[in-house]
Image 1 (cartoon, helix red, strand yellow):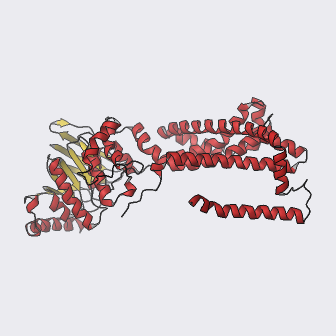
Image 2 (cartoon, helix red, strand yellow):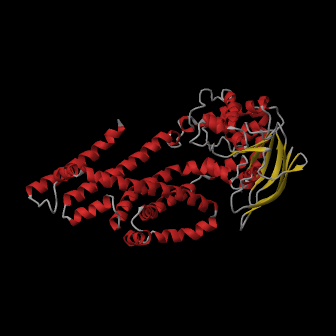
Image 3 (cartoon, helix red, strand yellow):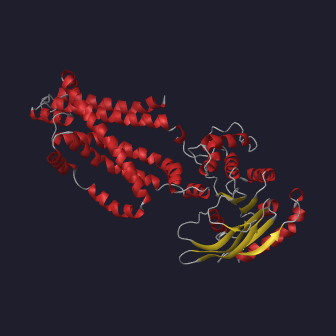
Length: 246
Length: 255
């Protein structure tokens, strides 16, 4: 279990995030939703060790009972845009995290190449990101994140750049991949439909300053989720978000 | 053949200008001592080809040595300045100010201090070409998208790994632009350095032709120096094409 305790983030003149605490469990997806500017991305960036310059954070992270310093190999981060390096092929992009963590180029490539097929990237190893569609690029970015050894994945609005149809397909696809390779996931999203469809738990953040105001479990099994059995949770989430916006 | 398609308008304009020049010289009966026709320049170039080639070789040597050393110095300096922001803040105004010193003033000083050998000319080429390369490298480093840096840092990369894996590739197009600008300066700087004091080179050839009132030979040397610059630019373009397949085509998403 990965625990974040008492996270406070401030800029020179503003308190952005105040005393945020939560825990991520392995094999479960936690979604973080909230209005724009409430600090969702800042929380994820801090946990990834890439808090922007000019922001100062206090807080602790524990993996099981051990205190972590950030960035940590225990988590793998995927930023909002796929941020694939355009000068690297899909296989090279996918292997990047492994190489940076010390694996040799050939070992890293040997590790990712057999996975391309499962990620819908069969035959694309030598192609460049610019030659792929948005959905394929996103899958390549997921592959790059998932092959890293971290037990937890931090996904910052991973589907925000995709059209509605591709997004639906990618959500199902991600759940399948996570079933094969279980990880603890913290996913930032704006979309409460996405949150209720994917998450085991939804954390709702309020703004000014950013803080967690609700921790809502989504109990129906993922395969059995329907509009009807999610309606009540969505109503609760919608009213919480509307409250924050007014 | 996109190259030919692009080159045709340029070749047509150049041919028209040369024809106009040739026509003017013939019709206005301008003295070849003042303005020789292109055909006279070509004839003079052919007649004096052996001597011209000797001087050209000296210029090529200085240009290549100076340009290569300048590239190495610019890269090393850019890396040092990139990793030491306080030094960059302190040094950049001085480097910019150094560019206001006219080459006309520097060239004779170089000869005075270092004599007529290779060193003063190479130093002058470095002084002239170093800054555009340094500036283009530093500007290129500054273009690293935060998302690329964040991605690498979250993977556990240190500053050197971020530099090697993302900053340098991102800086490549601007560095190449700086190289092209510097390549054009390099030949001009070499010729000027030779003009200020040398035993061989196109600069000294031009000076001697001018002193003998041989405008045709001056223009022949100018044509050769222009060809040398174009050749240098062509080599850079070739190097870019040979090494840069993965950098071409931008970052567009297909469908």
